[in-house]
Length: 87
Image (cartoon, helix red, strand yellow):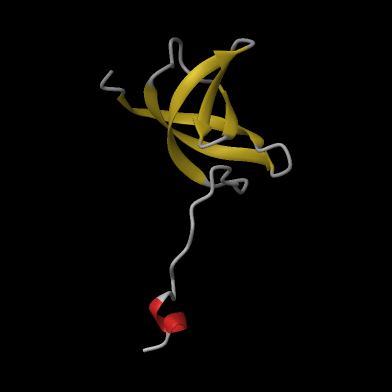
């Protein structure tokens, strides 16, 4: 067994993940900025259109509408609430 075969498939997570338009993800709504709900995934930020009232600390399913890999900021559409934080 070589070191290369041992490490095959091993990857590293990044603190600034990127997203593709149309991709569906689940994330916690972490805040509201200028009246728009925001979900942070690592250091990346998704602004959420059509989020329900009082969305902070809820786990939501989102569809990414667009994402700028240079700024790590994107837009996502709210699809449904999946759960709530246990805080």
